[in-house]
Image (cartoon, rainbow, N blue to C red; front, top):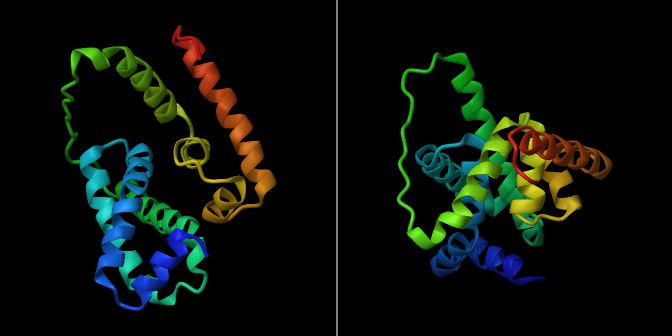
Length: 177
């Protein structure tokens, strides 16, 4: 059993320090995934916290501790989906404004990051999600398939389509993908 599996078992046995370690290890990738799906750092904070609450409630029932990562991202996906479903039902009442302060030596990378983020946001949700899970969160195909609830072949075809759409979007905007 890998490091995460052992941490999960320790959590299931009630070790508080093990849960702190688990959160320290998995909160950044969870937050990045949620942020990429909802497009707002503030909203990502709230939804990531909501996902961790669900993890705390469900952790005692997790039967395969070594499968923690796909399980965590499945919870995050459900949390995001529930939020989006609620958002689409109610009219938007406020638009969030976020300003980012960037150091001068980071400006070269910021444009690339901004271009890719705009490209990701332009993708349909299914394609955006598979790119985030596979490329940004480094989940293997099998884990992506488990999180998304589809066969690995479907993940491959969505990845192919998502890459094509992202490449087309960036080329349309005059950027070299």
